[in-house]
Length: 296
Image 1 (cartoon, rainbow, N blue to C red):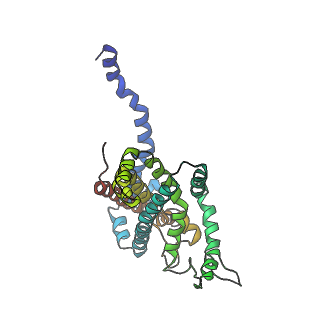
Image 2: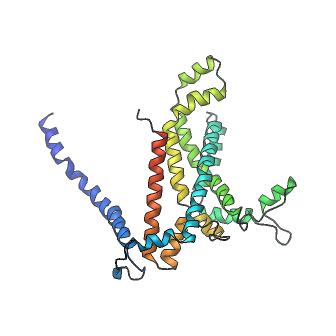
Image 3: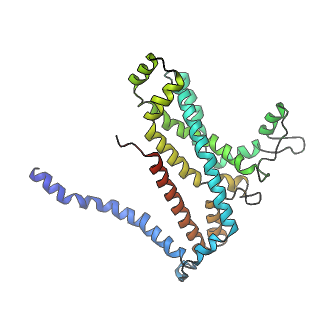
């Protein structure tokens, strides 16, 4: 090591100070405040008067049926979204992974819903799901009517509201995961695909034995990100159903929002946020342990 390199190695830690300062101000300090408020009776309008009350907020939340309903709804939404959206994105990526220009335009079409504002899409899908009223019905029920299937009140039926929101969310977000899979498909070894084809392997065997093993890290990334995004569910139920009917679409983020800004219960909202963060972090760690990302 030269003298210049030894001198740079001594000074290198000082270059980290700006980044560490930003991390402390925008991440560590807010997290510390949220942890303190979660064990206090903090009010949104006067947080400086917060008083210590131990684990009271946490025990209240765990016995609150509305919080448990919000947790169940969010977990069920993630269970619906993660496998279906991942499979749909992979299927679309395999379908449009062709060099011709027409297929490139098709990728753009599938990606368009990702860049459209989610509140706008919520309004559009509310109209699509509209039940029959005064002789008029939404496009979804009209399409079902062609096949003789009776129309449904999608957003007003407690059994159908959450699956309806999940279907809309899959349609809106699948383009993003498709683009990630497309990037991963560019790294699949062409030599292995050609060798498998020469050996007589069909499309399904090439997918299972060549393509999917090469996409392992991409698959881990997509599943992890989709899970995190699914647990952040808020805009769709808040705008389309207001958490109803019968709290069947109430999400954890909406519960935290209502506790903070409608009920002004800052301490209770912070406790819910800490539980939410802990659950998502634990689930993400378990996913990475289960899938086992490749190092090479």
